Amino acid sequence: MIGFRSILISLAVVAVGLSLRAPASSASTFVAWEVSDVAWNDVLNARAWPSSSSAVRAGYPNGTKLQMTGRCMNGVDLQRIARWSVQAQRNAVRATWCQIWHDPQQNGRWQEGWVYGKFIRPARF
Image (tube, rainbow, N blue to C red; front, top):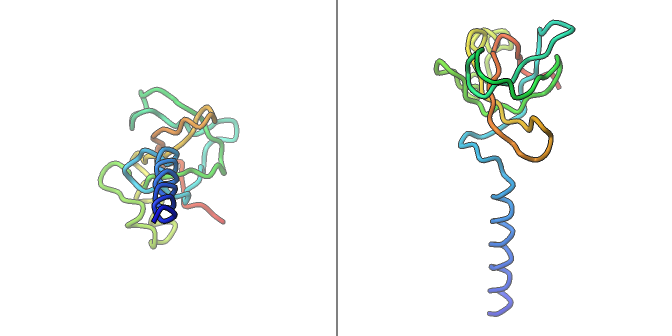
């Protein structure tokens, strides 16, 4: 029994360690969208809140893959529309804000942010 108990304790320690490293977002995350249609000399601003007057946390150029939470304003759910055509998906998010999970300082401190849907599209792989 001591061996079985040690295995259970080890598994519990690993599970706790993994949960501490996982994103704190309640939504599931997935990389499925990318920055698109931003002027060649500009970036898409990731903001603290879904508003153009909100603080800018990071800027991403065209082609950057975004880790989306699936949540957008106005009732848009990226998981629900995932099987739609690319154009239909783009139209669904065109005039709303969508939430991302990102690491602006690239230091392991992941946080939620918001990008404007006009400048994202389903990623091409």
